Amino acid sequence: MENKKNKGIVCDVRKCVYHDKDNYCTASQIAVGPSYAESSSETVCATFKPNDCEDCR
Image (tube, rainbow, N blue to C red; front, side, top):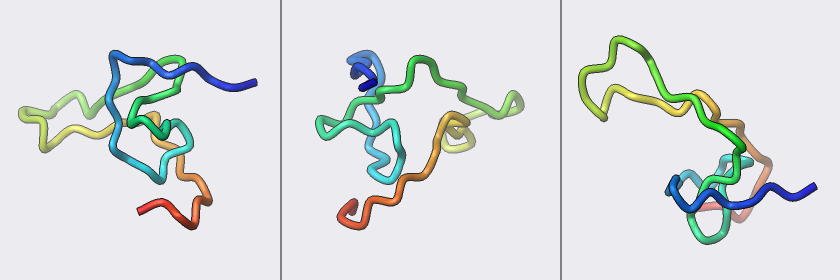
């Protein structure tokens, strides 16, 4: 089953299994943390799962 792109979530992380060729996230939901973050540079997508894409750059 193919996940649909979520046009509300832009994703540039090409080595994530949820990355779509049009730079959207295809996860059904995402988790962002950690709870103590005070700026965007301190946040991470906890939904990230690496893929085995050799051509992703």
